[in-house]
Image 1 (cartoon, helix red, strand yellow):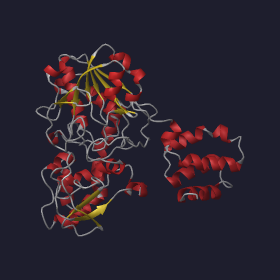
Image 2 (cartoon, one colour):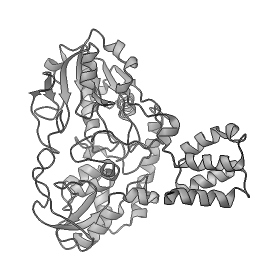
Image 3 (cartoon, one colour):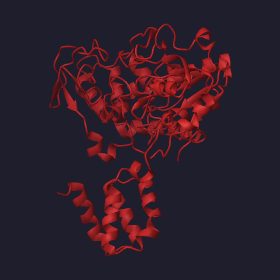
Image 4 (cartoon, one colour):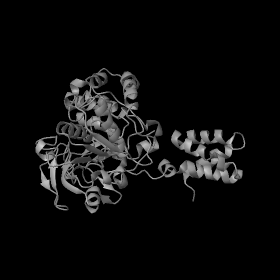
Length: 441
């Protein structure tokens, strides 16, 4: 049986195919069905081949292509770790320090295993927030360990210090950085990247970044961080969603002189294969304990503002960052009770208390007009309902927002359109800076 979307596509093509040239019809088809410009471009490249087909066959082919994922049309998106021919020669015969966690995979193999099997000496592993095996909750201090699966020493970059020490770097010839980022400023892996770059620059160690696709890399949005609000959840003057891979971001940190005392890191980036900023990527492994699936990854830029309020984002449930709620919220038909979850959230907000709110899984797929931007509506609605009855904001809110303006704008009753208008100048300036460091179209 044909899917509803397939039926809709066929119906649209039937209406237009007799009245419009093929290319115009394809563009209309794209607009009606949310097909990206990148996919339309790829479809248009196939035009010479389509002209030789009958109308009936051509339109069936167009309908089929329009429903395919863009990544299928381009070829499979391949993280740099899986492109071993591009980086193994650079690591041969060297002592390597690897910045990684359990999401650092190449296909179905962890990068540590791939390197060892190819004769690369992994002297130590540096682990970010949540630890090497993603067993630490957000903000939990992680100590140094030995990885039981490999016997390799694991040095925490989320414990006593957040930067590799001189002693840890001294025996190394190269440092390799491979973490799956999600393209959001308050996701701390880009802060770990900055400290690793700084340490490598200070101690003369080359850094190799194995790039990965950014699941939120198809847009740029949010307030640009102001210097006085710099912290580990936001170090640099970038918007909440910055639309860059972690390799591109590393080039920007270097190029803009954001390392301490203007240091520059000896940096190499191995690019992702078949990736563009229009790509919509599904991560094969959760990037951190509380982003268990793609709904959470895509909703994270919008819902994480609630971490600076009394609202729960579902930590302590099976669906963190896909729901929000509060025991006293006056609307919503979804109920949940946060409980301790070892390795993810030992003491979640409103632990053991039934919360009322909204469940948002699948929301952006069903509401494409909200895709590609931060959705402020949920924050504003929760404030209007709850904020005047009990304390709502906490001091963490400004660190997440990167500015003192957003809280005040909400208190002043500004709507989403008015707030977004104040972001425009900063976003325009950032877009010009960002352009210099992009590796992908």
